Image (cartoon, rainbow, N blue to C red; front, top):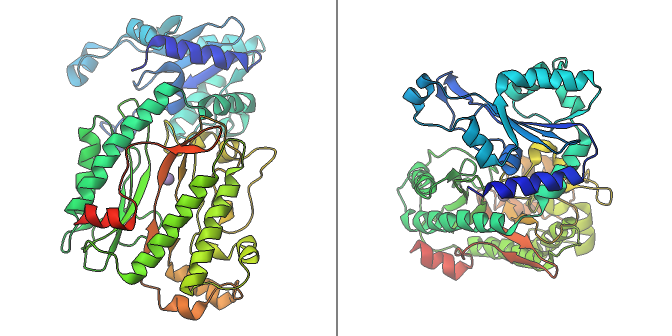
Length: 461
Ligand SMILES: [Mn+2]
């Protein structure tokens, strides 16, 4: 828990970039899994967490831009609430912890907003991503169903993105803490992986370490021998000699800060010749793209550095061919690397993407590409010092995609389809690091997690 002053200072900074009216930030409610009393683990909305710091369901924060006052709205806990769920903060404590000027009963909020709207004051809110929040907002503001999806405030969105993009040192410390736990996840998983184990056994260890670390997973763990399935959330397969495991997992701290790391490692403890070739190609791609990141340089450049390095390696292996510049410009590598190089990370593993991906990742200078592969890049603009990003190149052999491209003879000048056919059962490799951008470059966050072929083989033995 940060000190109340932190949230006051953040709200003061937000005030400076907005003109007038009211900012209404809804916190999240409980979300039922299969019936009302059986809920998913509660996760506070990240923007609410950023400006109010309290992780309780059913709260609203109202910032009056004209007098600068902040009010937190909620319900006093009842005896029944305490009987079932234990002691919980009342309104006075919520006010204190968030550093708000006032606290009031949620019943009052409707009247406050109705009066403001009658006075012609603008109520700024962000794009809701949960249906429950959408309904609450539309109810409170007298909007028609679905109207909140159009009427959210662009001014507020831009101000929040600008502020949350630059991580404070206390936020970087939280991310480093998340990465300490993540390092343990990888050393335990690499040691425990062996022929005959099931993916679920390793996935269970990984999730347990996240909980033991005081938080939980920042997102559902990917732990699969089918690394070419980019978001594979199944864990039922038995690990065999010759399989590669792609593990994409990250702990979140108790305060909600994320980490997001990927490693690929051999079940039998050593990479095969082919696995070495592709692994080294992805690792070189990571190394070169990391070296290219710096404040003021579009991250799209770094994506293209990764693509170019990978293409050059795949040409040496015999999977690709032709002029290197033309091949990269045409996007031929996207057969093997169909996703983006990385994304912003912070309180959310894909930070602020709920506000609209293009508000976070693109601007007036860098627009999202239409090209297959490059269009999947979630963050393309130039980062500033203090931005936290992931860098995560990969190389995959995706059967249906190979079939489609081959049938269309797509990029035939750059792809050696005859050779590709003999790699179809390879799977995939991805290696991911988390970085903070600095004036002259970037630095990798967190303790080192085995990454070179030699280090990974030692960690797996
Ligand atoms: Mn990622």
